[in-house]
Image (cartoon, rainbow, N blue to C red):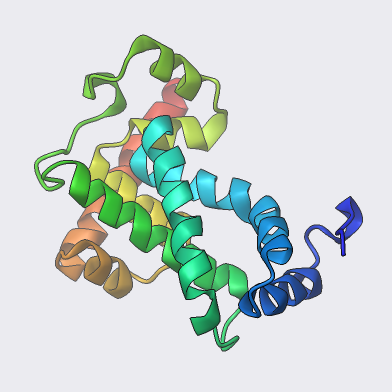
Length: 183
């Protein structure tokens, strides 16, 4: 069964695809991948601030999803569960890359190649500014403001105190406002 563009964002369609993928149907999983790839990649890019790492993490999300899709019980929306898996994979990926607590640098100081910086510059509005945030502030901001996690949840995910999560969120908002006002 091929899904047409009009059905692409229909939650019922996604749920049908999930059910079929849970039964091991690879074609359904492939369609689920097509439906969800951009959303997963966008979250990975916001969290990791690096296109190559975001692509790697996105692939890891879908590998894990294939292995864990049978565990999805439908107690929440699939997209909510998918965002949770994506956040966890991206944060785990970040920790594996480097000692993530010491990697609190902004986009300008990150050592990114000029081509990568130019790709990031092609982003618009808030996404472009989010990538400039220091890493911890960016992670907290994305998880709390964009993805809707409570500070207690963010603190647990990032192994920090709730007060630190709130402080980093405040820092991110302040920086984003300053940058926005100056653009």
